[in-house]
Length: 589
Image (cartoon, rainbow, N blue to C red):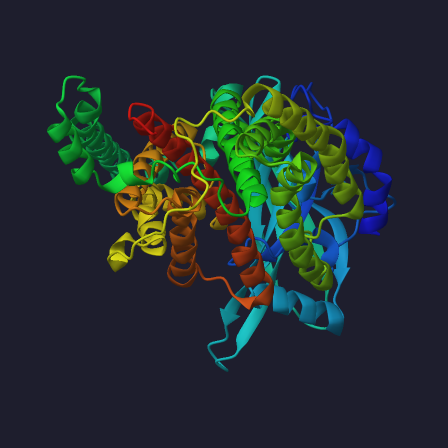
């Protein structure tokens, strides 16, 4: 029934695409006395496996009579695995309800086994009322003292407490009570009660109860920001020292106009390091199409992350279900111009001829990579019958966004980039015959420089990764986007500084293959994040099963691919500016 219903809702997805998922039928969140208030049932699943969620009625709870209403909140909500169904409980604004039965649950062997499996796996359930979540457990296990056997108990009563301020609901709380043993042939009375309590809490602060202030604003979080800031000061000082002390002496030789012939010959004889490769340093890199695509995509992702963080700070996106996902997808589509512009300009300035191939690769590289990973995860979710499975209609919507917004903007950006910044403007002329690269010590090879380049950027975001992972995998609402903005800016600065130092050392070793080395030196940050995610999985979580493991490492892989492309592009662009700057002031011919 679920795929059919969602396919019918295809047009609704398109219409609600840019609407905040938190706004649906209760858009104004205002009620009059005795107005009906809907309790929406959403999903159930093992508590230790956040992504392994199923339809609430996948367990044999009492089904609502007739065709229960469904609530669709937008693209991000569907991608987040939410499916809200009207519970049809009779709840009215400011009207208390004593213990009131709403159905009788007849237990047979199949139902008992389903509930026992759910209770054994610590199944939790999620409801929504006025866009506020309520959580609870399906049941509990009691130990029979006489026989030492475990007794599985199902909660049969929902005690709902609602706090209100004038005409608005402020807080909701759910207590599951009256555990009854699961026995074949037994009939259980399922009941609920509602209690309304006035409060002085304002509507603007009603979501604060879900925010874990002691966790996110812990002293270690502030310390990590300070520690990363000190790292920025150190690295910017190091790069400044290279520019002001090391390069200044080299420039002084080329600036002297009154040297005699003997001094000039001695300076030429002493010339070494980065100055010797001026005829090769601007040679087009290998696989120019791929490098242009990843640099363009990384520049787009950097701008995208900045925009989403700023929107999250201003708009408090953590309040809405799927709001972050919706914002990310829409902003990604509209920032595709940047990827085309950067990629097209870089490809043309390095002598690339097949710009259409470069443009198509740039526009499809990251989306189709994520689609490939998502297709595998979606197949697993469909096999398990999980809500995490993305409906076909939603896939079509995402493809339409890419085909009719993202792709044309990438094409436009490529055309503009070729015309505005695609002309070759290298400070030094590239020689016809490549200069042989001498053998150097192992720690000056591109592979070692690339591996070591990601350590300091990873160190600058290490603590923040813990908070991000915990919020995503352990039911915490991430709301400190101001911290994230600071960490993101620190990451950009540290990445640029580290990559510049690495490129300078590589050029001093007379190795002019700096382009890919700069990219991988910065992108290796993502490799360390992925290694950290393996540690986090085994030490900080209690996830089990093939479903959750595949989703954990699949989602983390998508995240790390995006992070790697972002950091790699920032590192390359920073190194490119640095190298053009230092070669601009020397005599290249």
